[in-house]
Length: 612
Image (tube, rainbow, N blue to C red; front, side, top):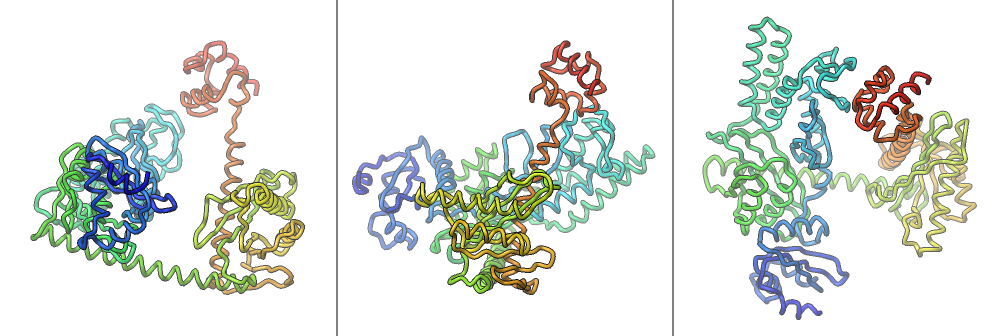
């Protein structure tokens, strides 16, 4: 069915449409309350069409559509399809999957507060997303200074009997694992943490003041001093927060700036009438995108993942079809949400400030990107001259070896391509030919040989479509002259033509083929900084794999050796008793109290543990 026939037969119902180019790639996704009217309007000759629409239409070769029951359903589906296809002409939130959250595990008996990268439906309370990992870490550090939160990963139930760790003795934990605080008292502290994360300092400070006074009246001066320190820390933060509205309202002020195909959206978070925080987000968009569409796309993508939606969202320009977006936000919040564009007064003044901050953030980002681009160009020129390449290297592969006294020997292969690491092409090798004493030369020989033999096989069998079949412009070996020598021997045996260099970590010396003396660059030279960055990533990847292998061996316990005790019963035993030590000291009757373990098996477990 050709495009003209599809346009003629479009239904007059709500839905989502997908524009495709000649290669079959989705280049734009949109929603409509009437698919026929909306889609056909793109192809009508009109001087009123924005430049973006005219450019888009020139690239449309085909279209698809999905019918929905309502415009609200179309909006939700549109957002999902934009995330799936990342269309060229849609506004897209950059790297939204990597934004961190602060997670409060309120589903646990004694909750923890930690940073996570994914928001799960696990009953926990999430705050964010945040764009700055450093801000999240500082917030967690500040919280742990004010509140003695547990940081361990133990499964703790009330009445625990474990020995308190060092954090308890230095006043950084209340030792719920040892039964030294009740679930209720710990829960009160978690409520205070949540109030802080919500920005409810106006409620939190009076609550802590009352607790301080109560503790002092009972002559519990140490506890009163702890509350006093918490209050002082929060009051310092409170003084920095600016009052913006007389009423204690919850609002988000959203502004934007755009330059070329990059946009920045700035959000000021107002809780209880005060600015409690701000953040900015980068978006990819058409060079001709207008502000209303940038803001609409941002609100749609951001609030789907946001942990909290305020009662009111304020924007500097009116949005297109705001009613549908407001209804959708209201469905997420559970209460009505208002989208407003103030024209005067304090709210307008704050929005102007948000817009200025968006411009500043975008300028800083562009300046930083320009600096990084120039530094990268200089680094690649250095490596081009070093390795005698015709052009700057686009793909660099690095090898590293990790072992502990010859055991669990592993090798890593990391890939740097076109200015960034390509983790999808990373590979790990469990070295088989080396046992006993460490032998980095033999390990490196095996790793390099396996990588390139596999690549040559794939080139013959699959015509270069597999990942191993893509060969690098430059190979980096972690080590000195010896490691480089064995890698070069493998290269020559396989008949490959590509430059190899090695980087010795102690003095950061670069060894080249056919040169007895190493090349020594200044430590701040762009080329060396890039080599070190790639080498360090290979080292990290190898060390992580090695630790995982060691951890698997270490995590094995005597419970794995007992006949009749599989993973489920082992987990049940550890959950019930807390540790192997406690299991060993239990009687058969106590062991039989565990779900899935009868008295006969309990007696066998008891006898095995006593003999071992």
